[in-house]
Image 1: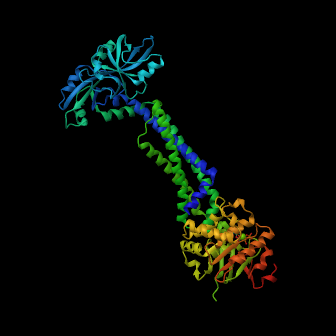
Image 2 (image 1 turned 90 degrees about the vertical axis):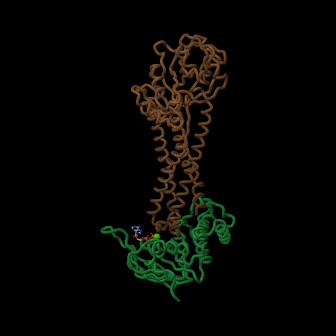
Image 3 (image 1 turned 120 degrees about the horizontal axis):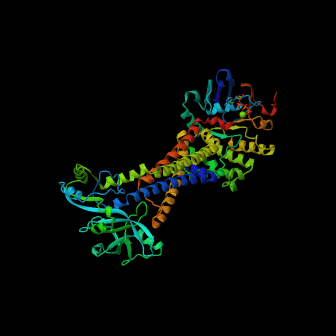
Length: 377
Length: 235
Ligand SMILES: Nc1ncnc2c1ncn2[C@@H]1O[C@H](COP(=O)(O)OP(=O)(O)OP(=O)(O)O)[C@@H](O)[C@H]1O
Ligand SMILES: [Mg+2]
């Protein structure tokens, strides 16, 4: 009888198409929107991921990674004096203005890495060597800088020159790093040179990056550092989540994405639920005939559940397939952001499962109430 | 010989309180093996209700119904359903063929419900359809068949699992006179067996003469049982 159930489903072409279409649309909408949302959240944590230090120390007033609150040089020594610190190095992060050879301006995120160790260096160099940062005026630019300059007709390559706050910067390498939320290019240099580039009032460090001694957990070490007044220490994970959650709480991003996702669920339930209800309703007379002919409730329930979950499965597959296709297309372009952790397919599957169960339940209630004697009328 | 079906003093009411109405007011009759029994009477007299309580798709208030020695009031709904699945074939007024299933798929449903595999069930159904002259139409959908052809599919479906009781409600009322006559002939030829009982509910007087006996109903009562249908005329 299960085959009969599937045949009844497939051959009711219009409703079958509506069901698959509705569920596909619903899965696509939910999968795509939540992935773009997660992608945006990933952008906000680009700095954290690009630098990758285990423990971050910042001014007590700084709430998240993209908030630049300057620290005095002396704080570096205070952190170094905490027991359990293997090493601690300064990191400079600041938005600066670059002036291009054609005279136009471009905001950049200047990153000053510890001059001796290059701690927080870009993980992927596509051209040049990190050590060349020791050369005079040297900077390393990211792929976003190359793309942005390219749009203005300037080709950035090793040897190119531009100005940062009126001081010469010479490109010695190109790296590929996670792009920032606002899309400002990352320009890496040494901490010492960053002090030269920075505007006079900002010649201070932003973060102290700390590595715990072997055997000491980052959580334990940050707890120790937190005892120092005026400083706040967090682990990499903490800073990642603090930053993402800060954006969730302080921007309208989750509301707009959440609205679309909820709309998707409503449309999914509306279209699919109603179509399935109509499908069962139209077949009620025949289901009653099956009942009269001796089909028992478990048989009919299995038929309806199979029909509901079959369309759910196909719609989910198509929807997630389209989401993945969209994702692979935009990932190549790196815009809009797209990030699909495993929770997203699971979440979408759960919603689709809910919609199908809900639809099937309505159908089953109708069938259970059905008097087999109605077929004689 | 024991009767195939014994119905004694069956009362069936619909609704409660003020709205309560009696559809059967103590109906009694017997059906024998190997006979074609017709239940006739004016519209609303309770024919369909009687058929429904006999096959257990409808509960009754009081009285006694025995089908092949099974006391229906002593059986659970599940038991009755299983009993019906195995022992009863149905032919409905509206045919009730599933529009999205082909003739052979429709006819195989009772076999599938009785646990046969799809391939075996369809093979059996196809052979049976061939016997009623629909060999070339087994993959047609109901809307591609004429009324008479649809009713032949319905007859094939009713008989596919070789039930001991065949129940038909107004099998000819959606058919023209000639097709109705042919359908009855086919039914008589294919369905009547010595160990089987066929009950037809109808008010189509043109087919009365096909019956072996006629149960006449009026207003919820059985008012007469006629052993000689050839000479039966409505009062
Ligand atoms: N489900 C129901 N609820 C309430 N009343 C019902 C129900 N089914 C039948 N009745 C009533 O019971 C009586 C007998 O109905 P039934 O359908 O058995 O008549 P019938 O002899 O088959 O008529 P027809 O020849 O028109 O088919 C009628 O008065 C009808 O209104
Ligand atoms: Mg009737």
